[in-house]
Image 1 (tube, rainbow, N blue to C red):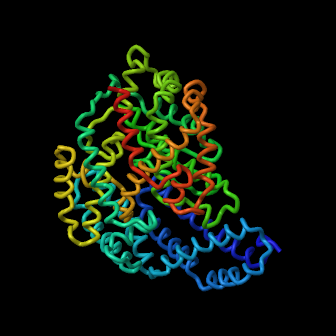
Image 2 (tube, helix red, strand yellow):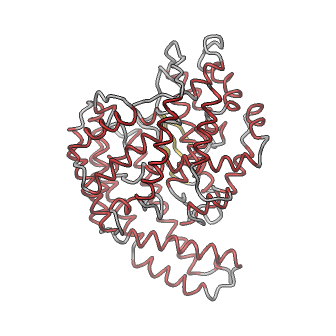
Image 3 (spheres, rainbow, N blue to C red):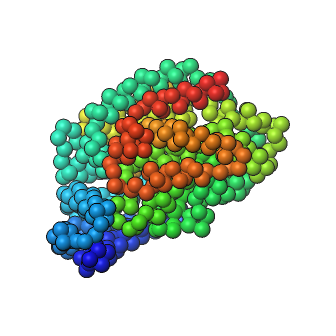
Length: 504
């Protein structure tokens, strides 16, 4: 009897599918909180999210699921399933057991308190950012930091509390390893940035948001994200979320002075959504194996489409006529070469989400260093703006004029996402290495992009090496399996240097 026909597997699959439905509903509530929710409804929504988060947590660590998994494991030895089927189910149970062991370490009241606090914190952060006043946010941030420390202590760690939080985003990642990796990257980037050229904004007049929205609405389907299974909305901070197998939501932020900001944000979020779209087509969806492998791998997919594709000459050669037509710009007002140099220009900026592909990692390193100190207790919340501003001066030689362009610019800490930021740089490293491996065996790719806007070969490669791998491999081995070697930052450095030579 195949595992697909056993009552133990059927019961397990039904239980997991129900958890997945709850998780998707929770994602929908979060999406609605940022896109459509009336301001006066925020407290009630926080309560709704807290209750549902607790329900998911309790279902995930329940004795009923213990029993289901115990019976399923006991029947594996009697299964007549083929070798591959048994391997996948065994791996699935390993992944699930690891997740459950970690989750079981958190008391339900801590999960509920954390969920309610962070949901309320989003509104407080948004208002403080609007008022450029960190003091309005500091009290709730202190609560979030305290709760995060408590969660880290529940998880446990060998050397450093921050490692326990990193584990939730990139498994088997340690602070001291990142410190060495980031220090090397920082030392190589700073001179590269100082040697780079800056090309100023070439848009001589404001581009109406209406024009930009119309242009951006067509971009996801061009890149490969089904317009029947996704939607694009404006938001304060661009993000992507999956609400179901055929429901991928992305957002962007529009700037009348620079339409490239919205376009590159769309390409970034489309990369996230297409990864989720690929995972949703894995055999056995939904299951613990058909989820994103790690935040670093997830980020590699968004960075690949934003940087390797979105800043390439082939893409802009194809997209340029569409771009100027939709935005009603005359080509002699914005020549192709002028636009292309600006797309790949390097400039020190105060805002992470507006940073170019070269300076971006310095923004991440700054945040990694700060939140590591916050979680260790070496840095007090009240001293956070001062340290932030000093590091911006040290790394970028920029003076922060207010908290909105400084410590309040990111949404992540309002959600308690300590340990998330380092995965952005890991994603950059993975993306450069993965794309190098793809292009080495698909040398005609750029011709297909430039002539037809055709990304088919890249989608097929990513589907085989990333999308349909799910959580079958760990991040290090996924990269090794796809590229022939373990993660190596040399490909990112080579990519960045080649882009700068191209526009010199």
